[in-house]
Amino acid sequence: MIDVTPKAAEELKALLTSKDAPASSGLRLGVERGGCAGLAYSMRIAEPEEGDEIIDLSGTRFIVAHDSFDFLRGCTVDFTDELSDRGFKIFNPNAARSCGCGTSFEPSEEGKKPEYDPALDGTACK
Image 1 (cartoon, rainbow, N blue to C red):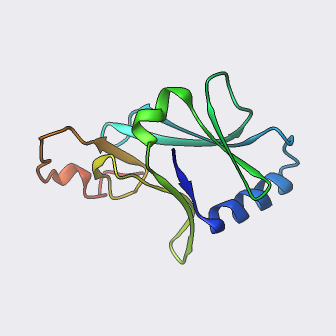
Image 2: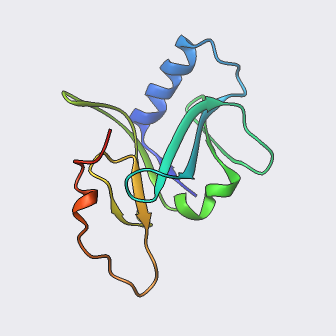
């Protein structure tokens, strides 16, 4: 369903330990309406819900929300630690384009090529 980099698994393990999270919890990934580009990624430490997909990796759990499967299929979850940006990132092959902030995206539509939209260049991001 999705790929998780070793760095993301390592960082999640440290995060869960620092939060004293229950062993059954993990990083729950989802997609919600909103954001600069129409859909926004959501990530939170949570327990799995009925119908979710659970990916156990290196003693951690990544949980994909059941209503977000189609949007997240084929994604890669990574963790970046750069001077101006630190956190979990989703690289999504299903996105026609993403907002400059990297937290929202427009899903691709078969046979349709997205046009440049200056509203998605990152200047409207939080």
